[in-house]
Image (cartoon, rainbow, N blue to C red; front, side, top):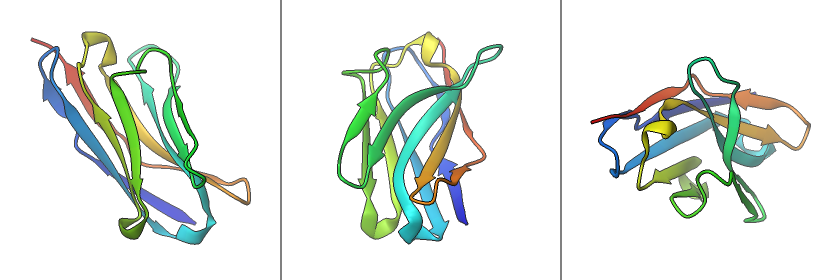
Length: 116
């Protein structure tokens, strides 16, 4: 199993920046990719960004050019750098790991609120 713990959420003004962190523990060697999802109130959870062990990345169109996903394998940590934040980025952000075995694991989520 993999355990994921997110941090870094908070309240930020429009145009501001935040960096989310996700620390993985447990069966680290089983992880094939790590990514970030978000879920706004009343909406479905959506994929924001994903980064595979090969270095391949995916970004949702709504965050391209503003968000950057990175991984520090030595620290078993994934990051989501969020710049030029907009009110519509307000959501609970969840870290997810995809395993080679097909098992997926989720963190507990961290709230991001963009408001003046």
